[in-house]
Length: 301
Image (cartoon, rainbow, N blue to C red; front, side, top):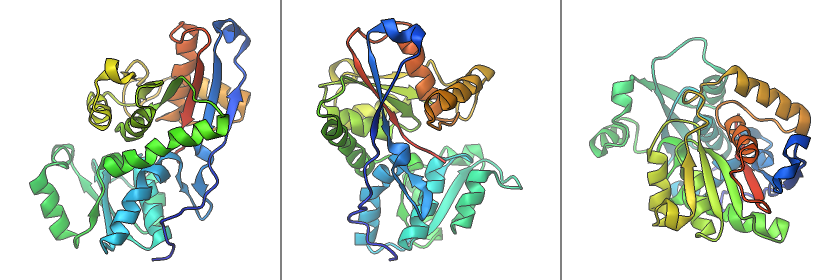
């Protein structure tokens, strides 16, 4: 392997306070951001943010098991696909990406980057893709692709949640206190599940769904062993803007404003929706006065 992955030795993403716009100052809350978008490998910057946390223990497991290939699933704009390709490039794994939908040339920037990192791209129509979690379907894929280490869509599994849970202690150590309200974008729910498990009900977590998938809540429930009320977490589906990779003029305008106001880049698929949500929720009194809110900027391509 090109790099030993037991210790990444990357500096943690910093925590910054964001000054609220004048019209929100009377809400009585403070807003912070955990800049995991700055947690990245310089040699392959698309391996960044929550993808590093979710892949960390999976890469160790793949290495210990002697696997030479990583196989995973994702949509055409999946940050996870790009991150797995980058991990293969850095750590010496061959990578295979099973992509939802038909091939389109020229490739979009995400898939182009994945292919540049050496990933083999295979496409499944939507009906076949829906079978991706069936044991028999997976066994056939594994047989045909040389016994790879299998990563689920989004990298979401128990090892991913373990990596994401470490973010809680890291943020608390950086701040010297634990924020009582946490918010982040959710695709498959793996990062939210890990953070919710790490918080263990002592603080509230709001997962802002980027896609209309009720399975996000089930992923968090399995990781925490608690339902929403007992586990002090919730999934908010009010900010999908029409679904995965969908956007509106309102979201586009917010992203442009946010980037100008705070010099923090966000994108429309995940992180832009999360930051739009937190500002809208503050405006509508969702958070109690005195709340210390931490938004986890999960990064992305």
